[in-house]
Image (cartoon, rainbow, N blue to C red; front, side):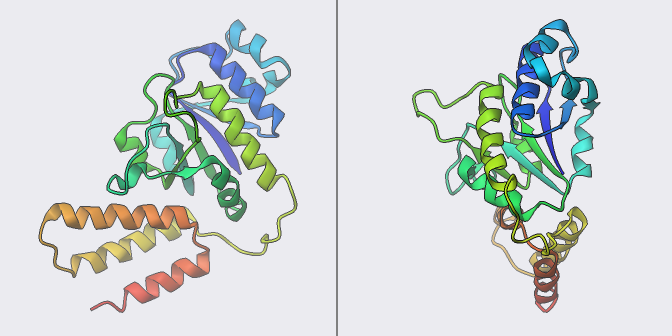
Length: 229
């Protein structure tokens, strides 16, 4: 199941537009994290048009609710370099292929704040981040416009027949256990500085998130890491 998560929305109109876009592409589960506006305000309902039911069923939660998802996918217009591992994104075109492999897991697609997007800490909490290729002169898009592009890509991929339905993706617990074993392996290694060790931790966490491991792959990786002396 894929939830569309809007972080601290400030404008009721944007929430309404988002619900409408979700309806366009067959998504139903809207989660609002610490909203700063009322999602059932007249402006939101008017702009949602035929998607009012999505607004009425929207859930209002706190940030910690994201921990209930197997995979958290962030969105960002702020790109990093190879040295900024957390903000090294996949493109919107790659989103669909990732979602195909996660069809049996609970996934959150997180849209950042209208003004500031996701903070560095929030990006770190994501398994990976997605960006939409746009003009360098003005790469930041309105939240609902960005959502339209991302949900279109998602619909094109998962709205069609799935040839990999028999493959079980790793769950949040599987990923957490893999990282625990990985950290044990890292603790056995020598690093010249604490920062270099932390970089390894971040790099591996991001690689595990982007790779969308199957359950079998996660167990194979854990078995391999446990052999490191």
